[in-house]
Each structure stands twice: as C-alpha cells, then as structure tokens.
Amino acid sequence: MATPDDLRPLIALSPPTAEQQGWDTAEYTCARCWTTVTATTEDELVRLVAEHRNTCGQQQASTR
Image 1 (tube, rainbow, N blue to C red):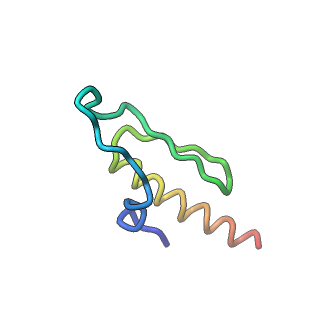
Image 2: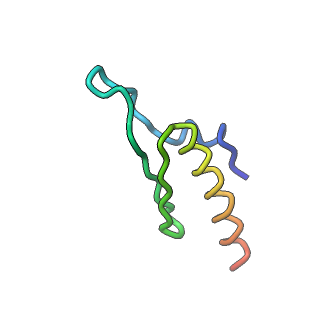
Image 3: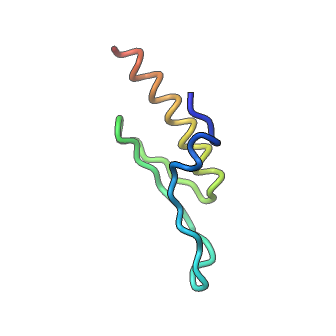
C-alpha cells in the first residue's frame, strides 16, 4: 500500500520562481482508470494520490 511518504519523491513539483510563488491547483490523472484528482496544496496532492493509488490498486486486484 502506498503512503504519502512513498509517493512524495514520485511527484515532481518544480520549486516556485520569483514570479511564481506557488500554484493554484495541481492535477493527477491515474493511468489505470483515468480518474483525475485535483488539489490546492502539495500535501493535499500527495495525500489524494496515495489514497487513489491504494483504492484503485485494490479495485484492479479484485477484478483479476
């Protein structure tokens, strides 16, 4: 099961530049089921991706 700490290195977020102090939203689209999750903070994105990967992985395993 993926945890937020496992996924943090996998999510490539570029550091903000002087003109760009942050980001409004970020999206992750699952390559297995094409579900898209949207977050407004990096911590929220990491949490949502971890939750989705765990849920989607369990659904994929149950259909095999």
